[in-house]
Length: 96
Image (cartoon, rainbow, N blue to C red):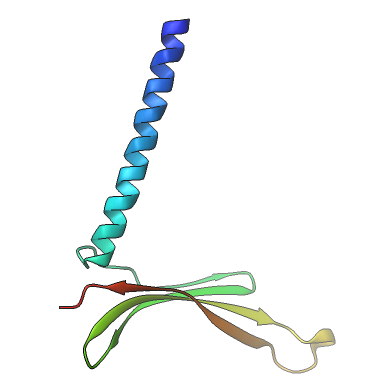
């Protein structure tokens, strides 16, 4: 029983190490623009998440940007709903 527990702990440690290394390698691949980043527009209830890659010029710089929008409705249906957005994340990417 003790040997089985030791093997289980060893496998869990190897799994945690593999996850940590894959996160680091994934982040490096994204920053070096090795992996093409997805362009998303997801709606979850009153929240909308929008992502895209932007290019700023002079000198050219690339960023992966994530925006979060919140839709609110006025009380008793008076008027149209309003949507307020805020930039949530901006990751610099390698320039060509």
